[in-house]
Every structure is written in C-alpha cells, then in structure tokens.
Image (cartoon, rainbow, N blue to C red; front, top):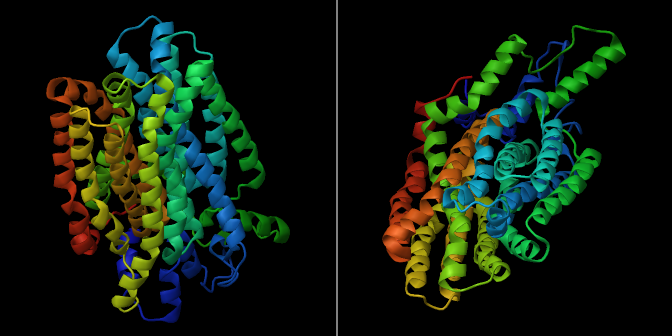
Length: 502
C-alpha cells in the first residue's frame, strides 16, 4: 500500500494515537504505529518521546544537521554553473571551436544529476542517509580533482559527468532528510533553508567563477570546489548523524541482540523478502513512480521545465551580456546576481508563507491536513515566470539598459523557487517512507531537461532573436500556470485513484 493511500485513510481515523501518527513523517510515523505491537520480539520506539527518534531530537541538533546538508546541497549545484564563465578559456586551451561541445561541457554535469538519483534514493532507503551522503561527497571530491587535472576536452567532459552523478546526492536526499526530522507543520522553513542550495548556487557560481577564471584560469575553479568539498566531507564525517528511522531501529535491534543474546529480536519494519528482491524493487522504484504516478510525473514535468529554463539562462548569459552588452568575462558573472536576488526573495516568501498557509488550510478543514496545502505559494507566484521571459527577452532585444533584463531574470527565479520547494514538500508529504525515491524520480526528469534544453538556446536565439525566442519560452510557461491549481483541487482524487504499490 502506498503512503499516499495511507495518508488518505489516516485522515479519517478518530483515535488519538492515529491522529498523532498522521502528523509524523513517513516511516517514522509508520514505525511508531507498528512499534506498539504486543509482540515482545518486535523492537520499536520506547514510547512517543524516545530520543532515538529523529522527530524527538532537539531543535539545535535538527537544524545543525539540516545546515550541514544544506551546505552540501549548495556546493554541488555551485559546481554546475561556476565553470561556465571559463568555458572560452577551456575551448582555447584544447583548440576546439565547437559551439555544441562548449555547451555540453557545462550541461553534462547536470546530466549526471539524472543518473545519480537512480542509485542514491533507493540506496538511502536500504542503508540510510548518512553513509550515502559521505561516500557521495568523497566521490564528488575525487572527480572534481580529476577535472582540475584534465589534459583534454574528452577527459574533462567525462569527469564532469561523473562528478555530477555523485553531486546529485544532497539534492535528492535533502527533502527526505527533512521529512525524517520535521513534522509536516514545520517543514516549510526547513525546506526553504535547504532550497537555498539548488536555487541560489547556480546563480552565485558564475559570479565566483567569472573572476576566478579571469585571474587564475579555469582549473582553479575546480581546485576551489575541491577545497570546499574536502572541508565539508570532514565536517560531515564528524557531525552528520543517521536520520532514517528504519536504519536507526535496525541498529537498535543489533545492539539489543548483542546485549541480550536474543537473536529472535527484529525491527518493527522487517524486510520479509530476499536482499536481491529488496535491491531490485528499490532500484526500479523511482522509475516506477515517474512512469506510473500522475502526481510524480506531472509535478516533476512542471519543475523540470523551470529547472531547464534556469540552466538555459546560465548557458546563454555570456551570449547576451558579453556579446550584446559588451561585458568582460569577470563582469558578466555579475549578471547572474539577478537570479540570485530573485531566488533569495522567493525563498523568503515561501519560507514565511508555506507553513502558515498549510496550518490555516488544515484548520479550515477541521484539522485534517493534505499535501495539496503545500501548493498555494506556487499557485500565486507562477505567473512571474511568464512575465520574466517577456521582460528579459524584449529588453535585451531592444538593447535596453542592462538592469532591465536582469530584473526579468530576478522575476523568473522568484517564480521558480516556490515551484521547487512546494513540489518537493508535496512529494515528501505524499510518499513519506519512499519520499527519497519520489524525489529521485523527479530529479531524473529535471536533470535530463536541465542538461538538454540549454543546447536549444543558441539556435533559438539565432533564428528568432532574443525577443521572440524568449517569448516562445514564456508562452510555454503560461500554459503551465493551471497545473498547480488543478492539483490543488483534484490532487486528493488523483492520489486515491492512482495509488502506487511497492
């Protein structure tokens, strides 16, 4: 039975214990309920206030772990765009004039984000979050160093792709980690903090990369990434704790078996199938969600378009601001600040309103919560994306003062942030225990669109110009505005009608 079906049923139960359970995220809530069995061989939580339960950790510990995960989530998207201002130097050093390769060397990293989630999400649901984070961070560090010492373009492209595969981990697991530790009513602020990484980093990266490439050369962009990744890896090893409830309980069972000698003890969520079957089901789960769940597919498609637009901006800014406005390599990096400022404003808006609106809508409906209550911030800000493309495109086409198209990009990121945060929270609330797989499925589609859509940027602008080229993108965004409204009204029906079984 899927968590979405369980949530719909839980909302109708009237006992105090079931109301408490419905407020607890994913597997934690499931374990709390199952752990009440009278079978003395079954090991669950030691009551509602068990300190092993991540839901009961102190605020300081929760926010400390979230801050570290958010830092990881900032670093890997930073690498996706930080390199872009130095691409002309790379092409010159390796004696290549291919426009396609100059774009691929940037976007291939994002393509790696499409492969990594297929392993990362399921692995975290088998072995837990902590070691998946740490091993991925180490692999990311290794391939980032490999990028720095590459001797030809093919090596650089290959190592960028592999670094992207490893770098996808925090962007996939962050939302699931939040679901492990925070109740539904408190996830909005936590998700906004974590969301700063995937949304602010691609905008800030080119600012740093522009000046670093100009002063020290493109290789130092990767050395800089390697240094900060090494520091974060050390911090993670020292400070990061396991948050996935099923793994925590399994560790508790092993400890009790050792202490008591009772080998019959088992977790309240035992695996009743062979390990090979666990692997097979876990690895195919994200794609099953993407292909069989209208919720996952349609919402992932929505946020994927936003993600693709973001990287189209990143890939084509040099064309607009270096060629159209005559900016230098270093100064052109500052053009990305519009995306960063808009992202920050979008994070503030979403962080301040998400939990408040969620609480009010739940209260209005007799205290019954629903994942759809995460969507109002997105519903209200989605028109900004359409407006942004018309403002950005036609102002750049007319060579209006450079601040005007930058304001257009700020409006885009203001509209994109609520999409990212609201949809991630919707998936976490809906799929609970399997939220990592749901987020992984979404990330796969995002990354594919983010990798290939920017390749259409130059042909689009060459054929239609900045004005009509961006207008086409704006019209596509306009067609997507009804999506969150439709899910707000019919989401519960869709969740009930199309349950996913695992």
